[in-house]
Amino acid sequence: MKILFIGGTGIISTACTELAVARGLEVTLLNRSQRSPVPGTRTIAADVSVPGAAAQALAGATWDAVVDFIAFNPRDVEARLGLFRDKVGQYVFISSASAYQKPLTHYLITESTPLANPLWDYSRNKIACEERLMGAYREEGFPFTTIRPSLTYSDWIVPLAVNSWLKGYTAIDRMRRGLPVIIPGDGLSLWTITHNSDFAKGLVGLLGHAGAIGHAFHITSEEALTWNQIYAMTAEAAGVPSPRFVHIASDFITACIPAMTGTLLGDKSHSAVFDNSKIRRFVPDFVATTRYRDGIARTVSWFDADASRRQIDLEACADWDRLIVAYGRGLDSAAKEFRPADAQAR
Picture 1 (cartoon, one colour):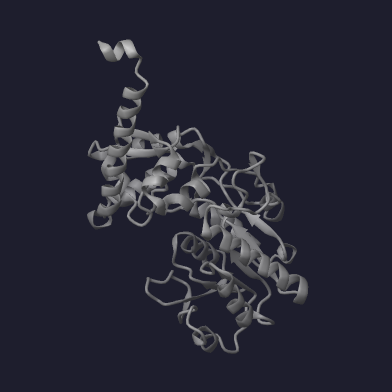
Picture 2 (cartoon, one colour):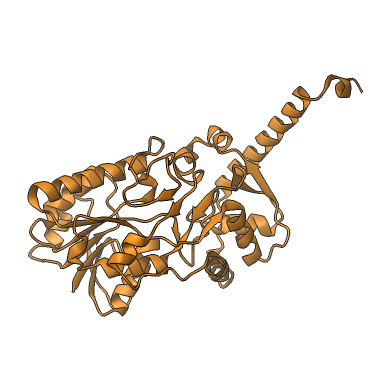
């Protein structure tokens, strides 16, 4: 099969590219060529966001499947429709499991769970993309498949609820230096974290699958852990026996750091437990085999192998420190306000 990955060198897409090549697929990457390509692939250098650039680069080409990792709004999807009408057997749109209903009305998420997220523009844009593709499928038979990943990490990502995403060693560094690390809420929400190598099994298994046209799938692990467990396993992998965790209510966090509203109140403060029976029906050999305890140990080892990888997000650290101080003051104020009158007198 001739496969085109738009992107192909990111957190999720790198694992998908590697597995597709390993399974003998002919893989071409369309990107700006700013990262080293995966061995065994061909790269077409073009910025898909520049009008006309991708059309010129792809002129005359047809594909059995196109996987689009970097379409984020309806304008992007409209441009892809223009690029690939009558030129692709299957267009795979990478959406997001954050598009599912917030808050949930049923704890177990299936592909039929409603799509509605009033708290995160990113998620609402993904929903709008899905709706546009469904319209194109109904009106003109455009052959799309939607995939909704949840929180997916790699050997170089530390997927904690409060951490720097691209400088993930920041939280590990704080643990190792005895500094407090923030867990949202009471840490008892259940969350599903998926290693990118497991996600790749489901995605690659769907490529060229005629029965998947018009369908949506999520592809996740089935290991549901509390945030307390996730943080504890991360600390264990980092060799920190007694980490300092601070539990802070999510709405307090976002009041102090509004930029976290979408990713926290619109996503990680809710429980996320997924039913993967649909992807298993379509890809019978799909199974997620990387437990978080094992995956995060690989991640910590990756950072420890090279000091240049251990970058610290100083701005994020400063925000967290201010947040922790503000929370402590709030606790002190509440303790004084609600202290019994006789205790105050003493």
